[in-house]
Length: 144
Image (cartoon, rainbow, N blue to C red; front, side, top):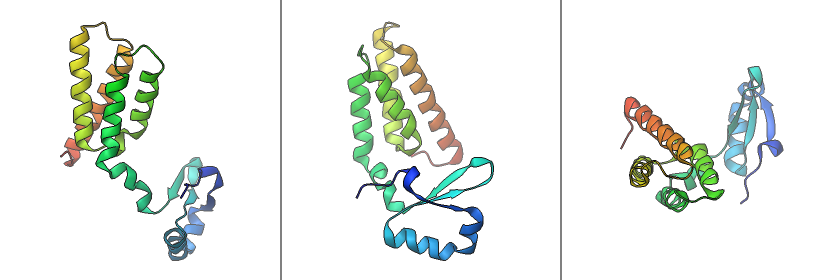
């Protein structure tokens, strides 16, 4: 099933959610749909079925990200920026193994290229963000 974009989701306020919490939960679960919850200061939240996140919890998702990084690193095309932007967007959803391998692969490649790696700033930034995510998880006690 194709997922809704946020523009097409039903929108409710936090106040409306409080009044009809059980009904909203039932609708989300039964209809496999999502609800946009609006709040103060234009903050928006999405309530959706947990199964929508299943693809990101699949080990194959991490393997595909690893393959994309290995393909893109060192290339002098648009691909490194596409892969880095995608990876950064989904970094919090990647498993610890994928993050560990990403840090190792980028480190080894940068050492091998000895400062001559194309788009080295891009890769250094991705590595730094991955290391930050690893440190955050370690401090919270959920690094595998």
